[in-house]
Image 1 (spheres, rainbow, N blue to C red):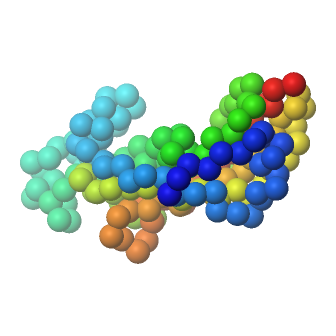
Image 2: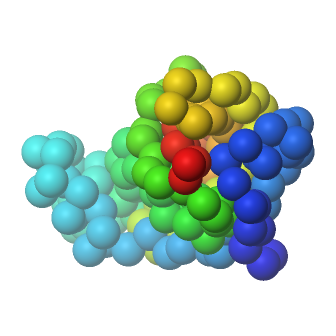
Length: 156
């Protein structure tokens, strides 16, 4: 799907209730999982011990950290949407996050973005609430469903 371009943060308000798009697929590699483990200090064997996983995990594969999956939302977002005339933007947080299916190393994931709310803020800002569904290629149940928020400040 082609990246959607919107003229300004204010123009986002007209898209409330719509799916904005779907990102490209991204393969979850063991290298990415290991780097995330190093960055967070979470070296639980189900993520990083490939040999043990061959014996003790379903299908013999390590799984990605749930928070690694969640942390891909900015990458997915840059694939889905570009808003013009933005001075700057900030991550405002998450309202709800659920990890509904593990992501095995070697799987491909993608993000599906829907705009559920857009509200005016001070300084020409718009606070947007998104529903993200992070899908696993070939699986019916998604890896993660998350409601996230961000504020984009328009150029004066």
